Image (cartoon, rainbow over all chains, first blue to last red; front, side):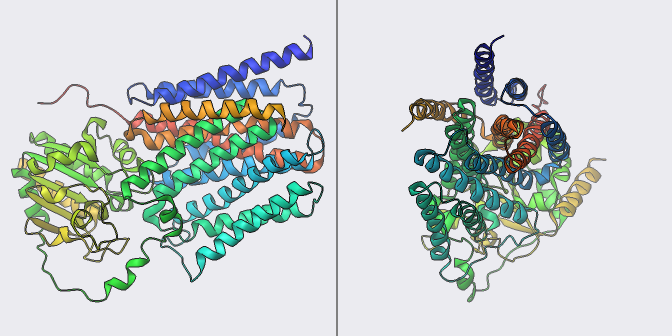
Length: 463
Length: 98
């Protein structure tokens, strides 16, 4: 077989891989057939990797084999993490993806197939900047989600000015390199400046904004891979990067809409800091609290119950206890559903995955827009570890920092019960008028043990 | 401007539209698996990393390529693995209880 013919076979393998990638995403439109998507993706990836190993340009296999084994050795444990660790795992995988794209871009600069032209230099510069900032940004995001770093926003005066100057510095160096690609000393400086910008970009962002940030980093990682495809003239990278980039972009838009905020506000707004000053004067308002026995009694008398899970449920690892509650209520003939806000948790779809892990059927997990109309006919809304997404001030109080954010209308249910550690305001520091309503009962305690006590009461009554 | 740039731009724009249309239809229920699956697909940069490492041009590029192979291949393996695990967890209720 001549080299040209072989090259054409390899290209054909890449085209098949690309088709399989698109099908893979298409299968995700329904949970019934979604697992076919993984299979299609795996076959496509295997085909592309296999074809690449046959590429005549590859002359040395030793390091490839060693690093593939290392990669698998790192990847398998990362694929087996608990569902509660999925947000930080995802951030880490954005970091790996971006690192890989940045490394290849750097390698292309030092040894291209031909001397680097100005045009190529522009492509490489942009690609390496995006890859580098996504790498450090994702590492910081993963650190925050793993709680190695503080989740609260870290802010200082003039922060945005400093961050933007650093970005301008990286872009300026890239432009200088385009003017003179042979100015090799500037290249590593540009990489370092871009790495620093990634750190500055994500440190001021608080935990509650993580769903948007993870989606944005996902998008950046994808677009850096697509840009790498331009640099290397590899269409399979352009397509895979465009798919990943547009996926991350769509998710970021959905997350922003669900918080009624813009990209710039998320990236430069340092949410959660603004409210620190308003917490000073607080009128004393009364709340009604209830015991697990009371809560069990009210739930047992209900016909329709909606459970509203939030990040607090994930922190308390209460999802399996919630499943027991679901089981015992369902057995009594009570209709139990779950109301899922798009930004509940730390990444898009976080609550769905946790509840699915706890074996709750997915047809019981209802999106916000679909379930909101049902709250007036709901006997009990049980809020477990969710706060801002249930705050009625978002509908009514124009002065509230979350005014205009779409919320779950739990305050329209006949009875609202809120499991919460204490009356301390939530992460964003915004007071929630829901807690002071006459129909609201506060259930103070740890989500896991409180739900456990309710389950205990309910199953005791059954005998 | 190299002629390849234009054809790559075509591919990029068309793939972006295809991605937008396909991903728009993904159930919000599966947004977490969507992210891990696109991560695994994006790890296809491993093919470029293999070529950089395998060309064996200079020590620097081989080392950079090798790091890139390990980083992206771990994403590929881990991404498919966790997506598969997650999707197995999504079960419908089956026969409806009374």
